[in-house]
Length: 462
Image (cartoon, rainbow, N blue to C red; front, side, top):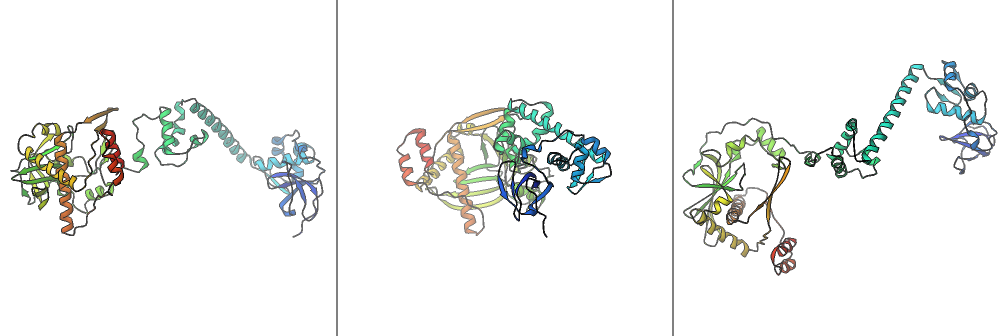
């Protein structure tokens, strides 16, 4: 296909920009509004007016009546030159370029330089309404961003803040407001902005939604406790020792005639493999512990049914452990059982360490601890606290280093060891929690430092 020669000083369209032809030929040279010149192929430009055009600065639009022209040309088809004459009463590079801008704008006309048609009135009215709305929306957005920069928002801003909330909870990656404020579009920045504007209270927690975690307990019905044969251990005094205020006692201990029993709430009594309760628990994986509440893995109604000490007799999975004088396991018995449990706080158990079975349990715990240390266990003694949010206020409760706490800890560690040994011997696949050994040089250095600083140094060696 051949292209007609382009006259020098003619007005052409290059991409979306006006250009003036400097030199004609097989590869015309054109000048752009930026002052840049370049050689192009004839097919890359579109002739709008033959000129002469001495400077692109001459393209200022003359006065004209676009609306009246649109009404007069209703249903007609004209060329660009004709449209320019209708609107501006003249056909010059400036009037042709101005007419082309109306075509590009697309409100009243559309088409090509050779064939331009008018747009129907109903379409023009709809487009005008859409443009007015767009202008209003842009003004409202600018006002909103201005208010945010001043640290305040208005009631009508809720429609904009919804996007920020989605960004804060990780449900949307982008945020127009953060972008307008020139802040990185991250969940953390969105959360900080919501707090700074007092749009969210400080207690609002975005993390469960970011991680797609449920924040409500399962709404599933519980079956009745089945009647099944279990080892009757109700004659053994059993004690569930926990922090004061604990609402879900799940383990207890007994000690009689040198045998240690650890009883664990038997959830499998109600939650059978493959039933809806088990499927829900498997999907959740664990209780979700939040500052202001705990979202349970199972329906909360299961606690009074299975919690040790919450009913006169409770189903349990009991571990009978025999230990020699060096603190080593010599025999392991595991059985579903019935137990009768008394609940105690650590402080209450502390006051009973001079009486049986607590005195015997405490002596056993000391043997177990010494065996662990002899085997290379690293003891780190740092202050512990319990942090809870109650009625919107943060409560920090120091946990005193009671001997009763150490007693229960050692017994539970031994039970974990017993389960691991039993599963290993019976070839039962279970997960094991392991930890690499400490950095020996750093550990040795930490042992030379007294007090809490030494304990922190010891922890850094792990």
